[in-house]
Image (cartoon, rainbow, N blue to C red):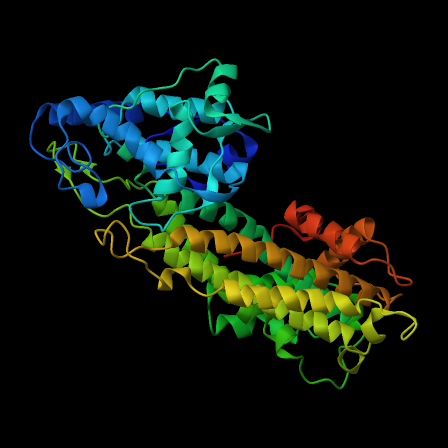
Length: 509
């Protein structure tokens, strides 16, 4: 069980809970922090002085004082009125992450929520009751208000949830699990939805998948280098050492180990070619820069998953309720936009390598990698698909955080759009998986034409794994299933596992 105290959660823990169904609970410290914080809120509730979100309305209604007898209704109404999400539901791993992160933030002891409410949230998580949360509707400031409200609805017996993959009402989901709806006390509704947990949850899952994707990009580039009879000279460690970017050094090491002991490369060591095109020669510099961006994303996410993002914050040492802006998603928005660009660039350079493989004027391979040019089209149109996805990514990569639309009658007059940035990062990642699948398909076909020469240690393992899933293209057939099969090898990390079994762990940083 992962124990939460608001300070020690790691990204590895997050993945275990989100995707491996590890259970989560509160540590003794976390329980004490929640109880102590709630005691302060209970004292504030007895006072008649206005405190934002406890004895006042929300947003532009913050000037309206709420009497004691209406404060519980205020919190329920907050959840009901803010559940305005639209679109497809977020995937289960993202929802589970958001639930975990919200519980961890509350355990930090700055939100003034009741212990029983946090325990209810964790009970839903551990019993795999997955609130149905529409993906769209957050502007990423004042927290992910709309999507988090849909999460809380289920705790109240409202909304919808998935149980064992079946969508049902929130009331039914609680009933089949033997649970009763809860009633929110003062400040609790605000404590549950004032935070960045949706954008951060999406970001955590994209980060995890991007680690594998960046390794895959190196594998695809190495396969392509082999198929195009490229040189390893550009991967000389001394080149990277005199520039010394961490990602570049890591990529250089990967490329050397992937192509080590390659009979294909050994066959043309003394050829007349002086240097390769940038899409091969600059793999360490381009892929490495994307890895450096991913490292920055990891640093920000690690801080945010242990952050108190509520408003007002309940200060345990003084008992004050201080209004601020920790709910603002700008830190996540900026790194998600950065990650979008880093991922899109992997797709950009991959498509250029695929184009070289298919162009007989550049590749010294059969046109479009078919033995029967003219009669067959070979892999000609796979590059069209890659180009389409690259173009789509160029639209998606526009920074969401560059935009801001004021909300709540201009009380909330600058917002982050961080949740949009995170969702776009996830979409770009999906597109790049397909772009790399197409490159791997073409590169494996190119290597086949170089037989009896064989690729290196890592590229050989990759080629074998691809060929186990997709046979050589002897004559024209439907390419879409082949692309999909290699996509699966990428998405479930089978390709990387096979390569790392041959050469050891690949480097990201």
